[in-house]
Length: 253
Ligand SMILES: Nc1ncnc2c1ncn2[C@@H]1O[C@H](COP(=O)(O)OP(=O)(O)OP(=O)(O)O)[C@@H](O)[C@H]1O
Ligand SMILES: [Mg+2]
Image (tube, rainbow, N blue to C red; front, side, top):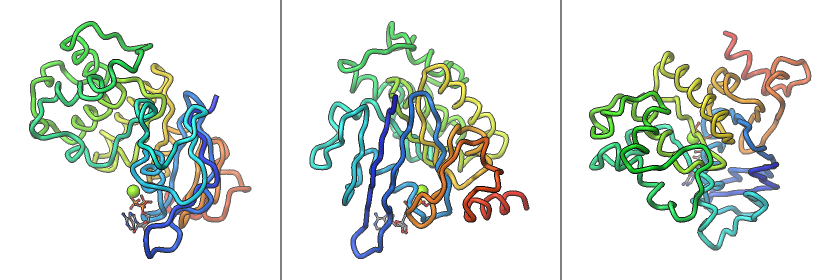
């Protein structure tokens, strides 16, 4: 089953040449699709269009067989899509304790969702379970964001995003602020959660190694177009697009 279908999507910002050109792809349930491409090629713009916070000029975005209507907000579909961005500091409200940030989406969508894997008994237990899922100690529930490291904050951002068991998680450079060791730990955690909760991911990065580590399928974007798309096992095949080969050679240096 396709969780997300994007068809012939085009997007321009005012006074700018095309930013996204005829983008078409699908994400199946439980699969991580990686999107790799150089800075400025349009990756975050695509994520913002899927989230409905950026309008599109033409094309279709279909979530669970429901066409996103650009004239309305995402309404009831919003609970199915969550996002984690590059900068964990700006994604957590500095005035809220971690437990309150964690509970925010759940409280917002409680009446509309049915948890299938997580178990909500009471707030305290739920917060403990969420922290435990991302390997953080339960005492962090009462901390404020400034008391946590970047990697810890990014784990909180993940815990918050998965708390309502969204079908699709958009991960836009989530490891960019982490050191290499934390990056690896974080990617392993994402992989484990994807399998446990049957989540689908769109994992965006300019880091081909990270994309290769976590994705089952990889799309390569260049100047707003998807120029190559393949199963990860096919990364090193000779049939790859010349731009993909260029990206690989940069990583091999
Ligand atoms: N709000 C905006 N208004 C006008 N132009 C924008 C806006 N946001 C992005 N752009 C332009 O659209 C293009 C794509 O930007 P986008 O942020 O999607 O790139 P990206 O692939 O995510 O890059 P990075 O890897 O650096 O995050 C860039 O040329 C950028 O300057
Ligand atoms: Mg970006």
